[in-house]
Image (cartoon, rainbow, N blue to C red; front, side, top):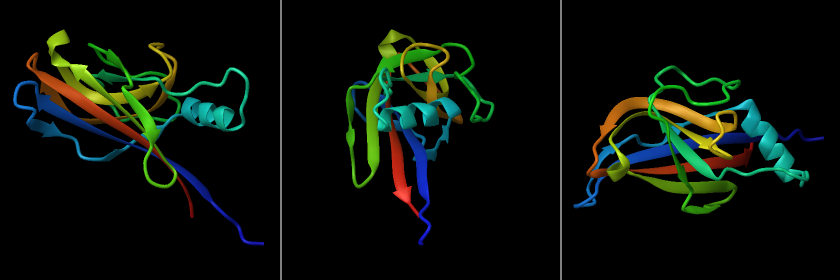
Length: 153
């Protein structure tokens, strides 16, 4: 019998955009995430149709600079800011996508990490990653795209 392997990988892309000109002034590029134990369990419960299962509903930006790990329950650092996903859907074969935007007008923020959450709870981190810290000014927005890619092989 042929053995199949299934893989789940998470990716994010963050862009700082000038509010007036809409020009991208900072771009993380696609960065692979660490999918947490909570995220794997939540995905399995959702796929199995378990009553009360949850899906990601928002993202969080933080100043965390330490590497992510699978047991991490929340992003760390000061200035955590949450945003609800504006768009959720699929893209390509086996990819779930989530997008949202953080308004700089709500206050400047040093962004060094992003995470995917079920709620504003500090214990519901699905996946996340750190990246080069960037300062977001009040005349800028931070656009975030998350993807979970499901594949065999």
